[in-house]
Amino acid sequence: MKKFTYLFINSFLVFLLVSCASVEDVRRSTDLIRTDNELTRILEEDRPVNKFDAEVDLITLADHAKSEADELKGAQGKIPDAIAYYRIASTAYWRSGNINVVNALFEVSNSGTDLCNNLGDKAPDRDCLFLRLVIPFAGLEADAKDKGLSGLLDSVNFNDDNDTKQEIGTMRIIKDSLIKAKSLVEKILVVGKDDRLLSHSGMQKYYCFNAQKALDYYNSTTTVFVVKIKEFNDKFPNKSLAPEITLKEARALRILEKEIPSFCK
Image (cartoon, rainbow, N blue to C red):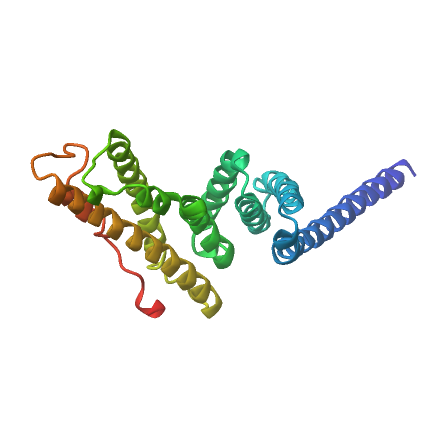
């Protein structure tokens, strides 16, 4: 009788654990879908109407997704779900526009990308594609916001025959920013060579639109930068911005190692 009771209890415990695991799997699966849908809803509905409320909602959503991802990333068979949560978190942190969550954005993006790399060919294409692009896209968007470098370039005018210390200092700041921007653009273009991540037409369309937008912004900004350097050299032939800035260095910034993929043209 004792043996029967022991076996019965053990069998019941196993059944209970399996049932709980199944319930938890269903809960997480449902939560993942709901969280993803909520992200879409906020981006499409709330953000244009009430920026502050949308920012709070996005950060709250991102914190939740990050928490779920952190819990799942070490669980067997749950890595794809963790990656999906990291993708949601990175999107929400980015689109919140809050500078106070930049570190969290880098953390979730890097964590998700590491999981993608560990899975190799078994990694979920869409989520891993976005995780590789979110940081360079976010960086370039932050640079372009409120006219960014374009606004700084507009503040420099060497054609008035005056080269103020402020203008020269501004050109040095722009050069440093363009060096960072060039690295971001090149990272975006490198992704275009990864056929696995861009195997679907939807992902190609997403990539091409954003990659072309980033490239156009970078090219237009560097073009104006080169023009400003040339203006300085023409107006002040006996002066030099070197060693900090030279026309040769400015033109070199326009040369990228990669081109936008042919399927985007």
